Each structure stands twice: as C-alpha cells, then as structure tokens.
Image (cartoon, rainbow, N blue to C red; front, top):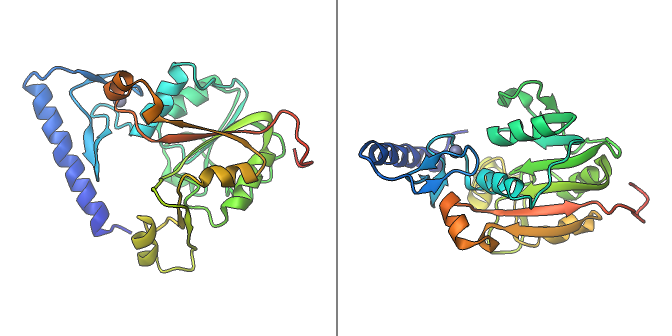
Length: 252
Ligand SMILES: [Zn+2]
C-alpha cells in the first residue's frame, strides 16, 4: 500500500539526494563520513522529518550507521557463532554478520522481499529454536509482530545463555501504545505511522524486554561523543538485551 505520506517522503528524498549530488559535483568538501560504507560525503539526504537520514553513496540509515559504528568501535562485539538476522535489508550488516558468523541465518516472514542469498522464512510468533543463537538482530521488526511478549519469549528461548538480542524500533516520547491487525490499515497508519505497524513504542520497551528475562542496556546515539556523532550523522537507540549466562527461569 503506497500512501500519500510515503510518496511525499520519497519525493523529498529524491530532491535531497539531487541537491547533495550537485553540491559534490560543484566541489563541496566531504566533511562527513558514512560509518557504514566508509565514504566521505558532503552530507546525508533527507527522509521525512530527518534532515541527515541517508548516505548518498550506500543509502545507509542513521540506525545502520549507528550499528556499524558500535561494532567498529568495539562497543558491540560480533560473535563468530550463530546469528539470526531478521528483515536483512541493511547491506553492510548482512555482509558483516555473514563474514563473522559460522551459522548466519538471514530471515523474514516474507523472504521474497529481500535480495540476500538464502533468506529463510521465519515467523517470530512461531520461532521454536532452543539455545541455538549467539546473536539475534532485528531493526524495525517488533512493531510489526502481533504479540511482542510472545515474540520476546521466543527470542529469549532461541538464544544461548549469554547470547544477545540487538533490537531497534521506531520510538516516540510517549509510553507504548498497542494496536492489532484487526484495526483498519488506515487507522494503523494514523496511529502508528505506517499501515503495517501494530504498535508504537516508547522507552518503556525496556520493561517489555526485561519481562522476557533479559538484562537490558540502552545505547543511544545522543550518548556518543558529539564530534563523532555529527561526523557520521548517527541516530537512533539500540536496545541491547542479554540472556543471563545462568537462568533461573527454567526455559533456557
Ligand atoms: Zn554509506
């Protein structure tokens, strides 16, 4: 479903990209750097309300750049074990996770939407693995699942003790509001910003992750050194959830 809101964002993005290309052609200095592809760039293109959204070279979003920065800086250690990567459309992370892991599983409810080779069909509502993965990564996925408590429990069970889930979701200032797929798509778009979103998260997402048994740390782009943050135009907040190495919950 293409909505007028999305179409307007797409037009704005194309204009912004054209302006950046023109500035680069006219000799503007590449004073910024994309932490995803490494390119020096004259700026980042606009998407919606975000003026520094996309890398003009590789298209990386602020959250894709944040993840690459956190891995490069050693803040997030990459496992050489098993990784389940949901909605694998961030090319730099597909390459990094695929190179690091001995068992890399890119997956989605609808794998045909992705170009990554060997994408598996995984419905997080039905995820039944036990202690298989060292790392679970899902960016902008949890706002689509019908029952996030069930999915967080499934992720917890699918991880090895000591394994981690790295989660990014769209956030607003208010507490989380839940909807459902029983709502008309138009109402979901009005309330949650997109027709296929069934909730809008606030920072209380932390409590939902913790309720599944995880220890949770939030890593916000705003907490990173301002000069570095500006140089890479980093944005967003990562919810880093760790399954305790020893668990008393009996389902690990
Ligand atoms: Zn880039």
